[in-house]
Length: 233
Ligand SMILES: Nc1ncnc2c1ncn2[C@@H]1O[C@H](COP(=O)(O)OP(=O)(O)OP(=O)(O)O)[C@@H](O)[C@H]1O
Ligand SMILES: [Mg+2]
Image 1 (cartoon, protein in one colour):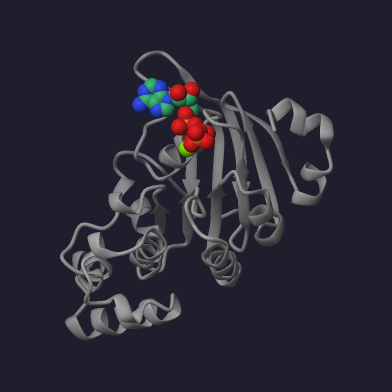
Image 2: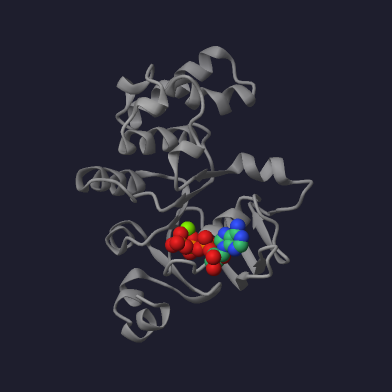
């Protein structure tokens, strides 16, 4: 059974703009899937629908056999982690330690477990030294790593990334690609970064005007000139 199944997803904004048009695909437990398409193709909208922040007009999302509905929203949110495009949307506590501990506290873990999980996650991301720093005093790349830590510490089954390498310098980008490849959870990564998709993803979804143009391996997609042209690359 696939970890996530999206069937016939259609979404329109209140102004009537149809941002997703009958999109269907699935994600397996160990998949790292790229999500590409030009500006306005619908990538961020799709991530928002998958994690229950936006409600589709039509279609269903199923995670681990549980359908995403109002009633199941809390359950699904527990299994999905979202790394937003802007880390400032994710970091709001006085220190990075507190930010990473926040979700764990909400889950009711004991202080011992929380402290252990926070330090393991910060170490894994090589940012132990940032634990006591306030988020607004960090560089863009450091903020990005901290935002990822808040998600990873929750052991999600599926992690959604929205343009994770935007504003990263080449070294930080390489580190992120390395990290992405080392993750065991399923991953869906919206990005304009073809190198990232080629190096880290086993599949890639191509969106254009809210429609899914392709669902294939990076090797097939990036050698299909007609498809890339159609997608607006
Ligand atoms: N809040 C909103 N209200 C109305 N239309 C919106 C809203 N947010 C996005 N859109 C429109 O929906 C479409 C899809 O936008 P979306 O943000 O999903 O694209 P994207 O693929 O993430 O683009 P980018 O690469 O620029 O991040 C675009 O036409 C956009 O203008
Ligand atoms: Mg976007």
